[in-house]
Length: 123
Image (tube, rainbow, N blue to C red; front, side, top):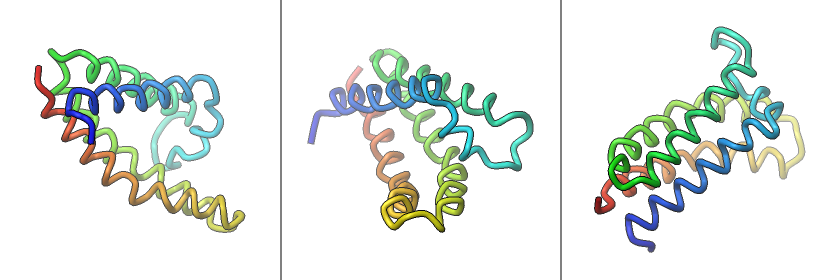
């Protein structure tokens, strides 16, 4: 298992990649924005991408790592409804697609735990 500092940087890389993806290929993210949210899905896609980029930057900097790690854990919990929507919407797709969508649901738990561990990195 990598050190907490290295783990924080790896998580920052994951978040930065996801954040960029929200701007490069927004349609896939627009599709999983819960309909109950006000405004356009594209606005939510851009906002969540920007948050992921900000969290990545915060995790990369030792001075802001702890607070960014806590915010990242909350972010991972907050986007869970989008993963539920994706699983529901993909229920009639191929077995591979359904497996991918359903696997995202429990994946939130290790992501939250990863963020919490990253927050314990030395400063």
